[in-house]
Length: 229
Image (cartoon, rainbow, N blue to C red):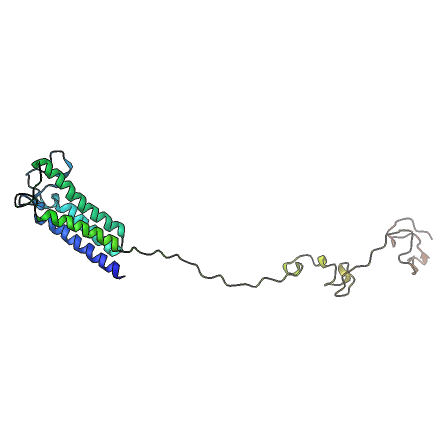
């Protein structure tokens, strides 16, 4: 936290120096606010033509200061890095163009002034502030914990509406083919159907009567035939 504070402070000092540098002498007593920014991108070098404030070196320096302020507020190291490189890039490019126009660069009263040194130092301070500043930490968003649910006990499907006959009548009695006894797990085997035999060994079948006569071949055992009287 303290390191970030120091880095932000250095970056702001560098931004203030970058904005102030055009109002100082850059070369031969000429202020940077009178040097045209267009001369940096032409092949003829720096011309003696006077520039307006927003068309001079104040324009890139002011933009770098705004970028620095944005980087400090957002704690963006990238923004601070771009601002520092912009200040240094403009300063170095101006020196190249000035050297082309004058033939050589000299220091002193008729040479490089304090404005160049201020701009160069301001760019270094902004880069140092970008190095010391920590960026924002990204936090992962976790969802709410899912409440634990106990599993539903297995009940042979009877809970979910399956056919009650699937339990062989153990639950619902002998009406579905079971033995009718709770807890019984087996069914007695069904005897084969014999249309001519008795319904059950050891029992006597009683034939129905029609009009006082006994019917021997009715539909009681599932067969059909003419009644015998």
